[in-house]
Figure 1 (cartoon, rainbow, N blue to C red):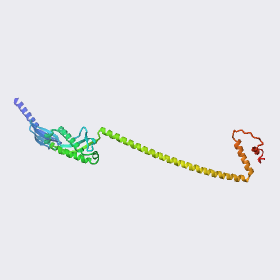
Figure 2 (cartoon, rainbow, N blue to C red):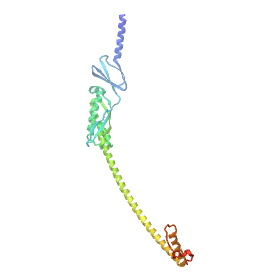
Figure 3 (cartoon, helix red, strand yellow):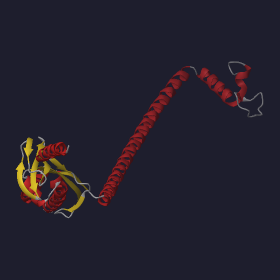
Length: 288
């Protein structure tokens, strides 16, 4: 019984030892074998691998591209003394697991060091640039300069920089509000100038229109007076010519006009003698 238990225990211990000595490396990972904390070998090929059981451990690191996205934007002073908020994201790869382990240990340590390095590089590069260069096509050159500086700084960390880009470049809130207020004031000033110019033009147009109207009305009145005078003159000539041909009819017509004017629809009372010369055509049409 004791021999059987011993055999079972030995087999179990042997299996446990074999299993402890075997480990797999995923195709997305790379492994660093440590013995009492000291690096012994690097395994970058995927598959089954062997280590000394119980005395060696394995640290796994990503072979894929990793991203570093800052949580908060940083305020940077440019060469033209403008202040802007910027943040930069980076993509990197662990190229040397041994050097990576010796310098930053893990991804958390790498992120901390990278954030500091990127922040310093961004401030140094942007400190020699103006706002106009950041907002124009020179932004790609600025990104390349930042990437070159970061690459030079992380070479000793076992990290390969794939890309570094400025993700955001905005004014701080207070500066943005001041710019907005200044732009608003400028637009309001321009609007007032446009209104004043428009009102001035409107006054000129109204004055010209009034002048033209006055001239047209005066010209029309003049022509009307001329036409009226010409008509009256022609009427007088016609009357004179007509009445000159028949004096009795002229006298009769004038008396009828006088009757209509004096007693037509007027409420005026007149006291005249029936024998008055005024009523001579009431007796007979010859006025005798």
